[in-house]
Length: 239
Image (cartoon, rainbow, N blue to C red; front, top):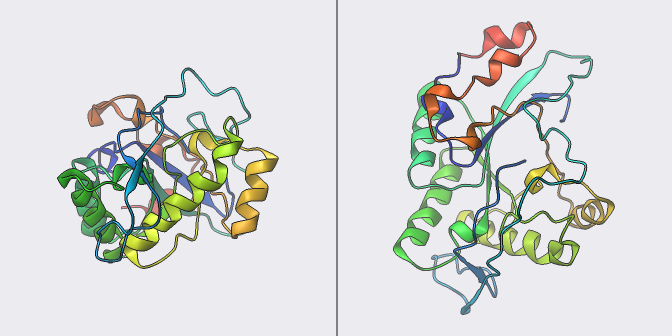
């Protein structure tokens, strides 16, 4: 059973059952700053930061969003399934360290799909979150691209290039490695986004199970994602 502590929300825990591929959480106000260019490797700004747009997406996303509900249908598997934990919308100074501690205790690795506005600026909080991104990578987890502002890129196609590239540059500057994976906010899918990602060689990673932990801040009432997993060797393999 996955402990409730592991489910402490930083934006969203999403579970991907492999080999079948299926994020999202509510949009938040943009409080960071978009980089004119990538940060220098020492964390200092290579060029001044421009203010980021500060609008929210209101209401539910109406576009086709695979896996946006609590879970999606499982497809037949030709090999034993594997469980892949992923966390969206961070880094968060409160929740992310708790998650890292729990993953380390269990000897597990995960994917952290981070949003750049959280660690793009030069305030003490921004610098601390940037160090946290480095810590995620140093602990052997994968840091991946979840856009800069968490906008739905299918509703805002003109933002696609900047949202993807700015966040990739920030991640590369913080960790020394460009992200290899991308997750669309809200699970949004459209041909223009598909083409933009293909141009950059970034696979769009969905999910199969969403515990809906991003809807509330009480870990005790977040359902375990394994409660919805059909009986399989997988359930017995998770501590």
